Length: 73
Ligand code: HEC
Image 1 (tube, protein in one colour):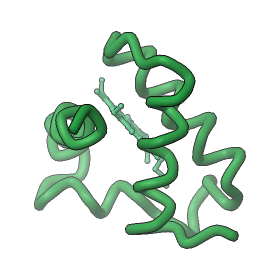
Image 2 (cartoon, rainbow, N blue to C red):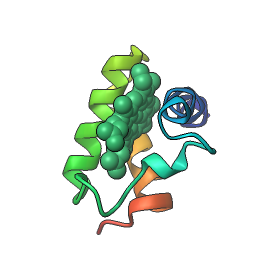
Image 3 (cartoon, rainbow, N blue to C red):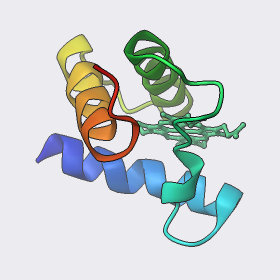
């Protein structure tokens, strides 16, 4: 549930940036090209947002994004 809440928080800001539903900010062909970089970006955005994620939350959100958008192995 926490990852769901977090995703919505994340969207608010991403939508301001890219419009639509915010999902188009997740670009598997962009700078983020492996699972480690994805996790790093989640960490970075989480710091901006001040969500106070624990490491396992960061991992969970990164895993969800990977599953839905990036599909790194
Ligand atoms: C304060 C605004 C803000 C918030 C809040 C925010 N982000 Fe971001 N996010 C950005 C910006 C800006 C970028 C970079 C967009 C660019 O340069 O193309 C970005 C990019 C990303 C990317 C990389 C997209 C790509 O493939 O290049 C990921 C992943 C990401 N954010 C995850 C998250 C997650 C997860 C959260 C919630 C925990 C979150 N963001 C919250 C502003 C935010």
